[in-house]
Image (cartoon, rainbow, N blue to C red):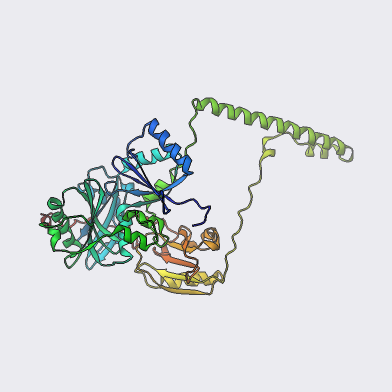
Length: 480
């Protein structure tokens, strides 16, 4: 990190407190007894604003707890490629304690033989809107939003890619129970009594895997004796060592580390994009906004009138000087009347970004559609690139992604304008400068449908078919 670079800031809003972390070795953790999930008082607003001003904080990353972003998975007895969101809401409505809205629910589909697993993330809309309003009042801009289950599963996948259970303490009396494989989260639930509640969640694993899950990650001081967890192959999560392995401060909790490590990238799902795009920094509120608005309009009109009058005088003087050499008709045609349009400034042309055509490019296909990497390589060759390698990726993405070295500058405008299939891609300057490739294109959608409106939050396969009305497999008999 450069001497003059501001450290990244991460908010972890808990039930009755706000944890703030900075990406630095010392003085990197602060706690405020403030609940951002409820409308904060003016006094607390002042306390936080003073702290942010002192530390020059203007934008933050956000860690969303499990009770606000819940992971649930469902099984269909048929192989399907898409599912209607309203039908998905009907499936999930009894699995959470808050009202589900279609636009605050995302899903991915995985085919398992003749069945389909639907992995969903359900967001508590009311909580998120309150939080967004509080951040706006604090004049903060959101840069990245990651759920705690996504952060932890991504971190675990860096050293363990098989299926596992994980128990992690997220609050004084609350634990996160996570069922995952690699980066895919099948189930996340908050529990308070491990002995009483864990068996139900263990039974869920029988729905998704052909064999029993026998791997367990857990905190150091968690006692599993006389519980169903006692039979698992256990690995103790040594948070301080894991953080130090990534060359970060030893006091960082497990879900905080991925925010500060470049190698971890996360999908921007629809609701997350919505939170990011619709969270403008709010200016200081005036006591009389209507009066201020009126004043601004009056000043603008007065300025236009004065400038227009000056231009009219100058133009008429010039017209009088040339009137002797003009015919009467020509004089009438060239006389200009004052008009506000004279004040319009031409819109500057967008600066064309130059991209080094000698850049080393890797194209990875993260879909099950054969030949897409070759198709994209052909498009890149037509643009003048010739140093291109192709391959497959195991990343589970819902949007086409381009990772590139920061030294290349802002290249997104070039590819958005010249590469139709990646015109809506997610561009990240996250590649290390010593990486083998300068740019890595990851294909997550069906490129043949790049000109159609595709709902990236609904399906991983992107194939547009009419969704049959199907009945999900009953799982209640597997849950004790």
